[in-house]
Length: 271
Ligand SMILES: NC(=O)c1ccc[n+]([C@@H]2O[C@H](COP(=O)([O-])OP(=O)(O)OC[C@H]3O[C@@H](n4cnc5c(N)ncnc54)[C@H](OP(=O)(O)O)[C@@H]3O)[C@@H](O)[C@H]2O)c1
Image 1 (cartoon, rainbow, N blue to C red):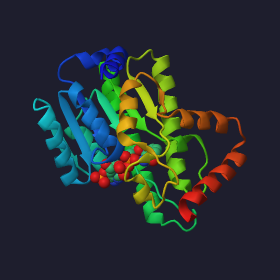
Image 2: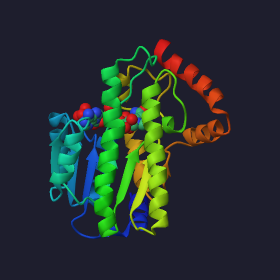
Image 3: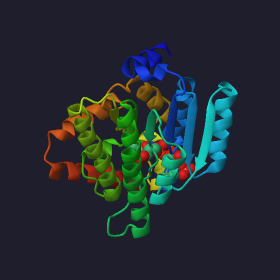
């Protein structure tokens, strides 16, 4: 716990001040839920977003059971609808830490995938994240403080046959974040951006995406702990093996990587 705070405080001095507000999308389960539980101690106001109100309310109760003084607001919204993202920003502007975590995947051959599901995925993983990043970044730049954490994936560094749309959405998240980072650096801004790129994590993700892991993924609690310790970094990749895989795959031509990923994904779907 000591190290958690050490890194958090070292990175962003603003965490020390009063009235700190955090907004987490996809807080109703998995990685978002664990991040909310872990970060509750550091924030005076929390805005927790997802579609499942029951799960959000249960989390709110759990947090307030431990931290009665934290003002926890739950917002049940479908972020795949662009207007909802704008509404969310209007209702809750000026956050100090935005965590764009809501997202999901789907497995199968591109031509056989349901188009409606593809578009819902693009709207959630890409369009919602794009809108919220832009609106909150404008606020943060005006105050010259704050941080955005975009949840990408190791999938964001490679092509993804048999999960093509999902991998493409996560490539968007990584590239968008890298570009904003450079713009902020040039502007000497105090606003920070980071991108979380985990490998497989044990959450509802696999069930939603219709895949099974042939090995045990990292627990979402461990991922959240790693994130909080490494918020000062731009790329946050919570496993040595995944960091190694990213490095190794980066040395190969992308046609080879696509072949390797096809074999990996085929095992997860067909075995
Ligand atoms: N698990 C992995 O292996 C893994 C690996 C790399 C990256 N990631 C990324 O990590 C993020 C979190 O996923 P997870 O693993 O924690 O999976 P999860 O347990 O399924 O959580 C996904 C969260 O996103 C929310 N969400 C999905 N669609 C939404 C929508 N249209 N509007 C609002 N909220 C929505 C869900 O809330 P509701 O159902 O309440 O709407 C839920 O809280 C995702 O971006 C995922 O791509 C996961």
